Length: 250
Image (cartoon, rainbow, N blue to C red):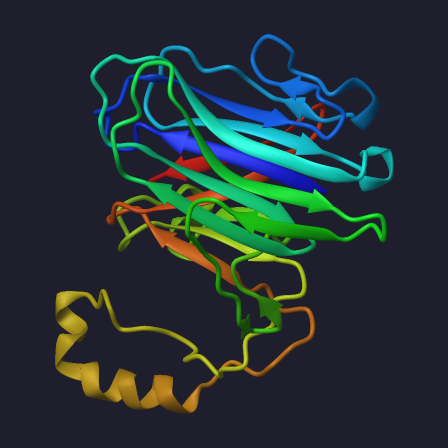
Protein backbone atom coordinates (compact mmCIF):
# COMPACT_ATOMS: atom_id res chain seq x y z
CA UNK A 1 0.00 0.00 0.00
CA UNK A 2 1.05 3.58 -0.67
CA UNK A 3 -0.03 6.35 1.73
CA UNK A 4 0.36 10.13 1.78
CA UNK A 5 -0.76 11.95 4.93
CA UNK A 6 -0.66 15.58 6.00
CA UNK A 7 -1.32 17.11 9.42
CA UNK A 8 -1.40 20.63 10.82
CA UNK A 9 -2.82 22.80 13.61
CA UNK A 10 -1.11 20.71 16.27
CA UNK A 11 -1.00 23.65 18.67
CA UNK A 12 -4.35 25.16 17.67
CA UNK A 13 -2.62 28.08 15.93
CA UNK A 14 -3.16 27.15 12.28
CA UNK A 15 -6.76 27.24 11.06
CA UNK A 16 -5.77 27.36 7.38
CA UNK A 17 -7.63 25.12 4.96
CA UNK A 18 -4.80 22.87 3.76
CA UNK A 19 -5.52 20.17 1.18
CA UNK A 20 -3.64 17.00 0.29
CA UNK A 21 -3.16 16.63 -3.47
CA UNK A 22 -1.73 13.89 -5.67
CA UNK A 23 -1.16 14.14 -9.40
CA UNK A 24 -1.15 10.60 -10.82
CA UNK A 25 0.89 9.49 -13.89
CA UNK A 26 -2.20 9.44 -16.11
CA UNK A 27 -2.93 13.11 -15.33
CA UNK A 28 -5.71 12.43 -12.82
CA UNK A 29 -5.60 14.61 -9.70
CA UNK A 30 -6.82 13.29 -6.34
CA UNK A 31 -7.99 16.17 -4.17
CA UNK A 32 -11.12 17.43 -2.42
CA UNK A 33 -13.03 17.94 -5.68
CA UNK A 34 -12.23 14.44 -6.90
CA UNK A 35 -11.49 12.17 -3.97
CA UNK A 36 -10.87 9.00 -5.96
CA UNK A 37 -8.36 7.90 -8.57
CA UNK A 38 -10.99 5.60 -10.14
CA UNK A 39 -8.96 2.86 -11.87
CA UNK A 40 -6.05 3.15 -9.42
CA UNK A 41 -8.44 3.02 -6.41
CA UNK A 42 -6.51 5.88 -4.81
CA UNK A 43 -8.73 7.70 -2.30
CA UNK A 44 -8.72 10.87 -0.22
CA UNK A 45 -10.48 10.01 3.04
CA UNK A 46 -11.65 13.44 4.21
CA UNK A 47 -11.48 17.15 3.33
CA UNK A 48 -10.92 19.17 6.51
CA UNK A 49 -12.04 22.74 5.89
CA UNK A 50 -12.23 24.10 9.45
CA UNK A 51 -9.67 22.35 11.69
CA UNK A 52 -10.88 21.37 15.16
CA UNK A 53 -7.72 20.34 16.95
CA UNK A 54 -5.09 18.39 15.00
CA UNK A 55 -6.13 18.07 11.33
CA UNK A 56 -5.16 14.98 9.30
CA UNK A 57 -5.92 14.10 5.68
CA UNK A 58 -4.86 10.83 4.00
CA UNK A 59 -4.61 9.64 0.41
CA UNK A 60 -4.11 5.88 0.10
CA UNK A 61 -3.80 3.26 -2.62
CA UNK A 62 -4.72 -0.27 -1.45
CA UNK A 63 -3.11 -2.30 -4.26
CA UNK A 64 -0.15 -1.33 -6.45
CA UNK A 65 -1.33 -3.81 -9.11
CA UNK A 66 -4.11 -1.35 -9.96
CA UNK A 67 -1.78 1.65 -10.10
CA UNK A 68 -0.24 3.10 -13.27
CA UNK A 69 3.57 3.05 -13.47
CA UNK A 70 5.13 6.51 -13.33
CA UNK A 71 5.35 9.52 -11.04
CA UNK A 72 2.88 10.25 -8.23
CA UNK A 73 3.43 13.90 -7.22
CA UNK A 74 2.40 14.74 -3.65
CA UNK A 75 1.74 18.31 -2.57
CA UNK A 76 0.03 20.43 0.06
CA UNK A 77 -2.16 23.30 -1.17
CA UNK A 78 -3.37 26.20 0.96
CA UNK A 79 -6.93 26.73 -0.25
CA UNK A 80 -7.80 29.35 2.39
CA UNK A 81 -5.29 31.27 4.48
CA UNK A 82 -6.66 32.16 7.92
CA UNK A 83 -3.51 33.51 9.54
CA UNK A 84 -1.79 30.22 10.36
CA UNK A 85 1.98 30.36 9.83
CA UNK A 86 3.23 27.15 11.44
CA UNK A 87 3.29 25.10 8.23
CA UNK A 88 2.53 21.37 8.17
CA UNK A 89 3.92 17.87 8.56
CA UNK A 90 3.62 15.09 6.01
CA UNK A 91 4.25 11.35 5.81
CA UNK A 92 4.75 8.96 2.92
CA UNK A 93 4.64 5.23 3.58
CA UNK A 94 5.31 2.24 1.34
CA UNK A 95 6.95 -1.20 1.62
CA UNK A 96 7.29 -0.92 5.39
CA UNK A 97 9.17 2.37 5.13
CA UNK A 98 7.92 5.59 6.67
CA UNK A 99 9.27 8.97 5.49
CA UNK A 100 8.51 12.10 7.50
CA UNK A 101 8.58 15.66 6.20
CA UNK A 102 8.28 18.98 8.00
CA UNK A 103 7.55 22.41 6.51
CA UNK A 104 7.62 25.11 9.19
CA UNK A 105 7.15 28.15 6.98
CA UNK A 106 4.07 30.16 6.10
CA UNK A 107 2.15 28.73 3.12
CA UNK A 108 0.57 31.60 1.21
CA UNK A 109 -3.00 31.73 -0.08
CA UNK A 110 -3.21 29.51 -3.16
CA UNK A 111 0.37 28.23 -2.79
CA UNK A 112 1.13 24.54 -3.33
CA UNK A 113 4.20 22.99 -1.70
CA UNK A 114 5.57 19.92 -3.47
CA UNK A 115 6.54 17.38 -0.80
CA UNK A 116 7.87 14.47 -2.87
CA UNK A 117 7.42 12.34 -5.97
CA UNK A 118 6.96 8.60 -5.60
CA UNK A 119 7.79 6.65 -8.74
CA UNK A 120 6.13 3.30 -9.35
CA UNK A 121 8.60 1.37 -11.48
CA UNK A 122 7.49 -1.22 -14.00
CA UNK A 123 9.12 -3.82 -11.76
CA UNK A 124 6.43 -2.97 -9.16
CA UNK A 125 8.83 -1.23 -6.79
CA UNK A 126 8.37 2.26 -5.36
CA UNK A 127 11.14 4.86 -5.48
CA UNK A 128 11.08 8.13 -3.53
CA UNK A 129 12.23 11.44 -5.02
CA UNK A 130 12.36 14.02 -2.24
CA UNK A 131 11.37 17.63 -2.83
CA UNK A 132 11.45 18.49 0.87
CA UNK A 133 14.08 16.93 3.18
CA UNK A 134 12.80 13.74 4.82
CA UNK A 135 13.73 11.90 7.98
CA UNK A 136 13.39 8.17 8.35
CA UNK A 137 14.95 5.73 10.77
CA UNK A 138 14.15 2.18 11.78
CA UNK A 139 15.71 -0.34 14.16
CA UNK A 140 14.63 -3.63 15.68
CA UNK A 141 13.20 -3.48 19.21
CA UNK A 142 11.64 -6.47 20.96
CA UNK A 143 11.34 -8.34 17.67
CA UNK A 144 9.66 -5.50 15.72
CA UNK A 145 11.00 -2.81 13.41
CA UNK A 146 10.49 0.71 14.74
CA UNK A 147 8.95 3.55 12.74
CA UNK A 148 6.47 1.14 11.13
CA UNK A 149 2.87 0.14 11.79
CA UNK A 150 2.22 -3.16 13.61
CA UNK A 151 -1.14 -4.80 14.43
CA UNK A 152 -2.36 -4.33 18.01
CA UNK A 153 -3.91 -7.41 19.62
CA UNK A 154 -5.48 -5.45 22.49
CA UNK A 155 -5.74 -1.92 23.89
CA UNK A 156 -6.20 -1.61 27.64
CA UNK A 157 -5.54 0.29 30.85
CA UNK A 158 -2.59 -0.64 33.05
CA UNK A 159 -3.42 -3.38 35.61
CA UNK A 160 -3.68 -0.91 38.50
CA UNK A 161 -6.89 0.34 36.83
CA UNK A 162 -8.46 -3.03 36.08
CA UNK A 163 -11.74 -4.07 37.70
CA UNK A 164 -12.95 -0.46 37.87
CA UNK A 165 -10.18 0.54 40.26
CA UNK A 166 -9.53 4.28 40.45
CA UNK A 167 -6.88 6.34 42.11
CA UNK A 168 -4.26 3.59 42.51
CA UNK A 169 -1.19 5.17 40.98
CA UNK A 170 -0.91 6.60 37.51
CA UNK A 171 -3.11 5.26 34.74
CA UNK A 172 -1.39 4.09 31.56
CA UNK A 173 -2.79 3.20 28.15
CA UNK A 174 -1.26 -0.01 26.76
CA UNK A 175 -1.25 -1.16 23.14
CA UNK A 176 -0.11 -4.78 22.95
CA UNK A 177 1.50 -5.50 19.57
CA UNK A 178 1.46 -8.78 17.67
CA UNK A 179 4.91 -10.37 17.59
CA UNK A 180 6.35 -8.04 20.25
CA UNK A 181 8.58 -9.99 22.65
CA UNK A 182 10.41 -8.39 25.56
CA UNK A 183 14.10 -9.24 25.77
CA UNK A 184 14.19 -8.15 29.42
CA UNK A 185 13.24 -9.81 32.72
CA UNK A 186 11.06 -7.25 34.52
CA UNK A 187 10.43 -7.22 38.28
CA UNK A 188 7.43 -9.11 39.58
CA UNK A 189 6.12 -5.98 41.30
CA UNK A 190 6.99 -2.32 41.69
CA UNK A 191 7.32 -0.07 44.72
CA UNK A 192 6.31 3.19 43.09
CA UNK A 193 3.23 3.65 45.26
CA UNK A 194 3.72 1.92 48.61
CA UNK A 195 1.32 2.73 51.39
CA UNK A 196 2.78 4.81 54.18
CA UNK A 197 2.83 1.92 56.66
CA UNK A 198 4.96 -0.14 54.24
CA UNK A 199 7.58 2.54 53.53
CA UNK A 200 9.82 1.29 56.34
CA UNK A 201 10.05 -2.01 54.44
CA UNK A 202 10.80 -0.44 51.07
CA UNK A 203 14.30 -1.94 50.78
CA UNK A 204 12.93 -5.39 51.54
CA UNK A 205 10.36 -5.05 48.76
CA UNK A 206 13.04 -3.82 46.36
CA UNK A 207 15.19 -6.87 47.13
CA UNK A 208 12.22 -9.22 46.65
CA UNK A 209 11.27 -7.55 43.39
CA UNK A 210 14.80 -7.97 42.05
CA UNK A 211 14.64 -11.72 42.77
CA UNK A 212 11.05 -12.32 41.61
CA UNK A 213 11.71 -11.78 37.92
CA UNK A 214 8.94 -12.47 35.38
CA UNK A 215 9.84 -15.54 33.33
CA UNK A 216 9.86 -15.26 29.54
CA UNK A 217 6.74 -16.59 27.83
CA UNK A 218 5.87 -16.92 24.15
CA UNK A 219 2.31 -15.81 24.94
CA UNK A 220 3.38 -12.62 26.70
CA UNK A 221 1.61 -9.31 26.08
CA UNK A 222 4.15 -6.65 25.18
CA UNK A 223 3.93 -3.36 23.37
CA UNK A 224 3.74 0.39 23.98
CA UNK A 225 2.46 2.28 27.02
CA UNK A 226 1.54 5.93 27.49
CA UNK A 227 1.04 7.66 30.84
CA UNK A 228 -2.15 9.65 31.33
CA UNK A 229 -0.11 12.14 33.38
CA UNK A 230 2.11 13.19 30.45
CA UNK A 231 1.24 15.04 27.27
CA UNK A 232 2.04 12.70 24.41
CA UNK A 233 0.84 11.69 20.96
CA UNK A 234 1.05 8.74 18.58
CA UNK A 235 -0.14 7.80 15.10
CA UNK A 236 -2.46 4.83 14.51
CA UNK A 237 -3.99 3.24 11.46
CA UNK A 238 -7.54 2.01 11.94
CA UNK A 239 -9.30 -0.38 9.58
CA UNK A 240 -12.92 -1.50 9.45
CA UNK A 241 -15.64 -0.12 7.23
CA UNK A 242 -12.98 2.45 6.25
CA UNK A 243 -9.22 2.91 6.57
CA UNK A 244 -7.75 6.00 8.13
CA UNK A 245 -4.54 7.17 9.73
CA UNK A 246 -5.16 9.21 12.87
CA UNK A 247 -3.04 11.12 15.34
CA UNK A 248 -4.09 10.46 18.96
CA UNK A 249 -3.19 13.11 21.53
CA UNK A 250 -3.12 12.22 25.23
